[in-house]
Amino acid sequence: MPLMWAHAEFIKLLRSCVDGHVFDRPPEVEARYRDAHPSAIRWEVWKPNRQIRRVTRGSTLRIQAPALFTLRWSSDEWRTVNDTVAFSTAIGVSCVDIAVALEQVAPIVFTFRWKDGWWEGRNYEVAVDDA
Image 1 (spheres, rainbow, N blue to C red):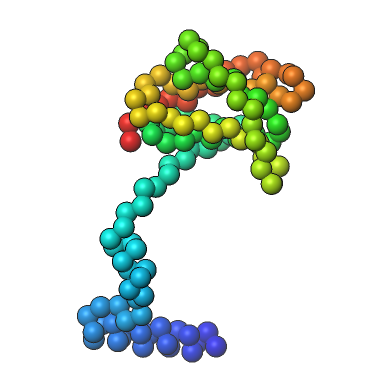
Image 2 (image 1 turned 180 degrees about the horizontal axis):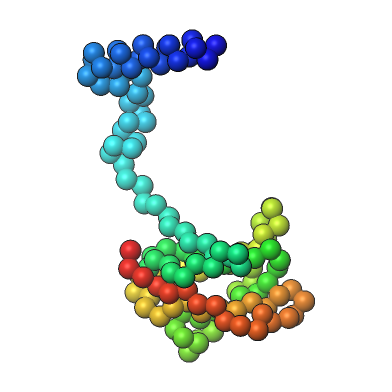
């Protein structure tokens, strides 16, 4: 059957060449991707084994870890502090999402307090860049 499928694809390609446009392109799908430009949600994921260094303004920074935690973080170099409890996913990963404002200039700085009350003992930093 793979040879029949390949032959059918070849015939569709020949027909498309003769017609001057793609033969089997659904008009609804074409209109969706040609006319509509859905706003893409940009995500950057930081995790212990993938510590990104930069995030783009207007995106979401997801801090991810393999155990439950509370994230202590700041977006203004520790002048204000936020404590956010991580949510747990169905696959056992815990996450905190931080919306990076379009006017954000200072880096996002954070540390972990694990479920047992133990503090990470160090700060992590993610710089904020233009798109």
